[in-house]
Image (tube, rainbow, N blue to C red; front, side, top):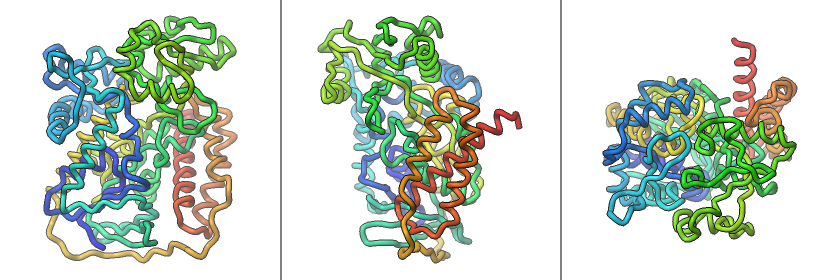
Length: 486
């Protein structure tokens, strides 16, 4: 099958790209697993932006983004992000997204760490899911977009006319071709032992782009969210949103004491990297990894109304957040780096674009400001679609590549991904361990070579293991290069 554009990923970036592509473009949208299983749908806090707000200014949003990012942000893309926020927030409202409103009819904007104004638009505490559902509903009405869920992208090759991709769906392996390709495959959380990310977040798109020759930048810039629910058992840790602290929750140590004053004057509303570092340092000081969020001093009915999903999730775990302290600890949450792109989301590989969490637009600098991620996904996927629209030609020629999925070959050995996750967890957590990085890097290189050179069946387990090994290699290699000052 031949398409003008193939989009890998059905989160906010992939769906919004499809929404903004020309109506006469033939588009294939791939979702690795079920639709709405993506990091977008897990985003609780909201989407940041200055939209119909006389108390706020884009210059303030821009400055907050720089401060959170350690002033290592790309100035051009940050300016685009904050100046175009109103355009894309308005558009998704037109597409049916329902943000919470106050009794006077104005939108309720919440506050999160690092923001100097209340500018976070939200749908209770399930904003990402609301956006994903409404975007998906719209894309399903577009006759030029073919959506395939439960379809694994197994390989991508460059051709003279664009790209060939090997995909695996319910009917087996198939080769599809396109003139343009958009990677919108999300984050890398599942390369860690503990993460807030969904099961799809294994870094596949970054691996494919890297193998195609795209530049990968800032993969060691990983954000560890300070307040994931600490159940000590499940790999996927559900998030206790930044907005809970924004609405007044206290962060307590094992002795039930607030401690952020020892580390930052902004207390609980310091940026995420600051709070995560403070927790780890406080853990070393007290000799305990027990930490809690406490919002029991707030009106119980308001808490339940504001955070219904978090409230219910915690009830399912045996905690009532209106009366109980919530056990929390940092875990992997977001990737600031990724596939290097220009302001129109183009990579250095002609025809290859990347947007959303798998891309590196430079807007986040060294640390993402809360709730800028959904906005980034919208703004820069729209730019990708608009740039493709300018380049689309009514071409009928498609080169194709013959893929060998090695269907009769053995599956990968058991335990490779488990070992890789453990290596990253112990080597490159909140405060990286330089000695562990040096000790483990050789083993990661060996596992990656085994997967690349071994004659294994190209199935979902193989693709995700190879992606995990590639991501681990890139993270640790980047950390070693930075340590040497190269």
